[in-house]
Image 1 (cartoon, rainbow, N blue to C red):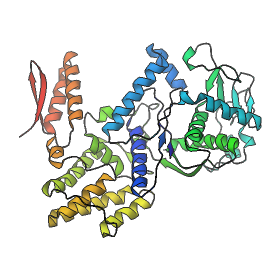
Image 2 (image 1 turned 180 degrees about the horizontal axis):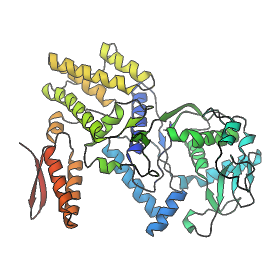
Image 3 (image 1 turned 30 degrees about the horizontal axis):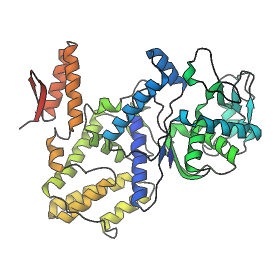
Image 4 (image 1 turned 60 degrees about the horizontal axis):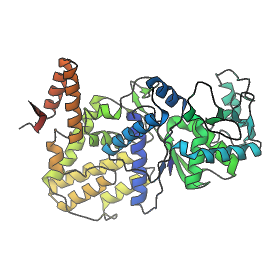
Length: 433
C-alpha cells in the first residue's frame, strides 16, 4: 500500500490527521485479516512551497524539512498512528525519477521544452482520465490557465523543472536534461515503483489528489512500465470547516498540536474513526466534545468491568458484525456501533469476557488500549502530553503578559477536571476531587 504523505513546509493540520488515521486503520485491519502488509507513506521534501518557506525563514531546505518531519512524527505518534514500514523522502529518489523521465522521453511521452523543462505529453497517453472519469476534451474545456508557449498542450505537466537563478543550490540536481529538480507528480511514481514494484495493491491519498496528481501518476508509471500501477485506489474525504475543505491555502486549518491542547489524542482519533473514511467530516468543538463524551462511555464500561484477555471468536454475532462492517470498504461507523452494543452488554451483564471483546475489537481501530481509570481520571480524557502542552502555553501567555489568555487556559483545564498549582519550581497539576 502506497499513500501520498505530507509536503513538509509547515505543521500538520487536522486534514492530514484524517488521511493518516484513515490509512492507519486500513493497514491495521488488513493485518488483522491475515495479510502481510508493506505500507509506504512518502514525504515530499522538495516543492515550491518548501523553497519559499525556507527562504522566508533564512534556513536551509534540509533544516526546515527535518524539523517538520520530526513534528509530523510527534503528532502521528500522539494520535496512535503506527509508523509505515517505509517513509521515503523524495530527495533520496532523484536517480529513479530521472530514469523514469528518460524512459518516458524514449517512448515519446515526454519532451524537452524551450524553457529547459521536461514535460509529459498528456494526449499521447491513451488512458489519461480513466481514474477521475474526465475526458481530455472536458479537461481542455475546463483549463483556466493560459497556454504556456513552452507546452505543446495546456494539459501537459512538468516532469523536470529547469533550475532558476533565485533558487538555492540544495534544490538543484545535475541531470541529462540540465540542472534542475523534479516535478511533484514524478516523485510518487518513482518512489512507489521502486519500493513496491511496477504494480501493487492499494494506492491511497486525499480526495483532492485524485486529479491531477493520481491521474498523472498513472500516466507516468503506466506510460513508462506498460503495467497497471495500482489494483485499488482509495481516497479519504475532507475535514470541513463551515462547509469548506480545511486547508492551509484557505487559512481555515487547525494544526494537530493546537487541537491537542484542547482535546486528548484518543478523542481526536475517535472523532475521525467513527466516520467513514470516504465521507466529509465537519470539524467543530461541539463535534469533538460529543466524541469525547461517547469515548468516555466506552471507557466507563471497561472501568466498571475489568476486561479478560480474550481471543476474538469471529463466529460471535457482534464480532461477526464488526468484521462484516470492516470487510465492506472499511466501514468504521458500523464497527464503532458494535463497540457501543458491547459496552451496553458489559454494563448489563458484568461479563469480563464481553469487556475483553470490547477492548480487543477497539484495539483494531487503535482505540480503548489505555487503562480505563487512568483515562477517565486524567482530566476527563486529557493525557499527560495534552496537559503539559496547555501548561506550557499558559506559561508563554504569562511571559507575554497576556493574562487573559493564561486565565482562559487555567479555567479550561479546571473545566476538564485539572487543577493547576503554581510554585517557585514550576506549575504542577492534579485531578480535581
